[in-house]
Length: 598
Image (cartoon, rainbow, N blue to C red; front, side, top):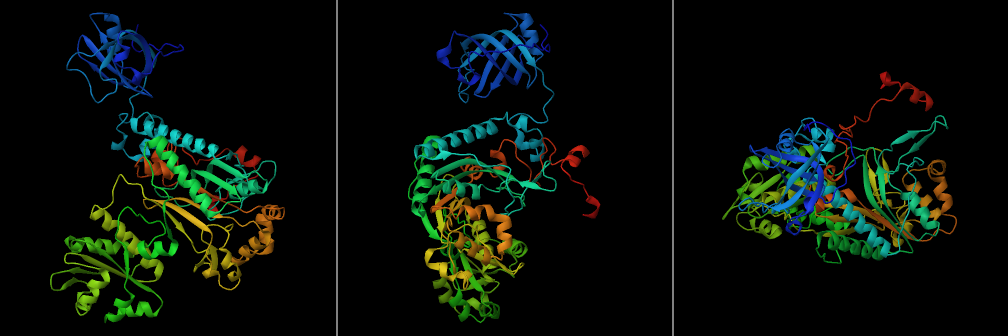
């Protein structure tokens, strides 16, 4: 038989490669998979055969079958083969303790080449050495690696644990439409032209928000879905144009019930998939506490370094910049970095340049705490109030004290970024801790300077705190919503809320953000009508499955937990999409391109 001669036949394995152990010694087995490695040592050819469950060493001996040995010597990496043979112990000194099947090998007595392979663009399992775009272009090869195989299997196990738990809590898994009406929810919609309705378009769902609420109106009480969601937005490491969320909705539910459900669901996932126990209930902080203490509504509580309010200190200092900021309604806040005096001036200047570029900070004021005096950019203003500075920051010798002044948003974003950099510099961020926290009591609206309008912080269907409803028409900025985020290690995992179940209240919310009665009818008329027919109180939440997997697998981006992701430009190197379509397709969907005018 020629080693390159492909045989077209159905292969029936007796075992998977990674399953064989010492208790299989003497058995005749039939294996199939990919040639992971091959080594020709003269009279012996060794093949590491790989399938989804692991590796097994195959031995071809010229002394036993010269023709079979010759065929094996012509094999190359990633050939697909089937092998029959007898399981035997590896010779003494040849055992591989790092391999589950490392105590045995299979002495081959037949070989079938099922397919050959071109030389892969990168060695399987060593894709980290090549750029990501190449990995994504040849994703089918990348998926053969141990890392990606583990990630995909882990994804399956987590999904099954979620289904198991929610089924035990009497939730129904219900599908909602993928082709739906365009009801923008914050990001841009992906739209789909209709062939049978000229000039009309479907939208792909940013989330099943309105449909899951109508399921509650329909009396289905407890719903969930492992839902695909689509958002045409600028991307980063934890975002994709299409992502998966664990969509959950409950009738007659309180915020406390939803918290308990989600905490118990995560406890079940950790117990089943990681064999670990989670401490519950999770910590809770309000939105304002999160901003004041950490500068962000998604704080990483795995380490300390909390922000310090410097209003009193700034007033006492003779530094006019601080005075001007406070007089204009701004904030002055600081961050103490224990032992941070070891940072060089160059390091501090790089941090300062970063917050200027990305957050619009005017600058970074800083001092190092010496035994008798301060050193740094505002040392002369701080030395005259040394004791007040030390008491305000709770600082000791060797600390670095950072100060930022400006508009609240700029100050919070800048110090939140500096806090993370300081935590990494001081090696305070643990790698094996999972710290969940609920962030509650968000403002319902925020003012957009660009549009000159109020906008919903999360979405338009969130119930205000009951005591704040009377402020809708007079003080929108002082209204808090019954909405909540779940944060894990500084990453927002889920957003949820108690929903509005009354048409009149929903229309009042629309008016606050400038949606007229006519526009509300055009965009949301079908949903508003549903609220007139005995809509029950309800609420829900939607944890992001991809982000959960990214954190549990300790990956840096969700692209490594999605089998076929897009790049940061929403492009797929694998199949070249988005791509042009035929003129016939454009005509059928009544579309004419006018790219020159763009």
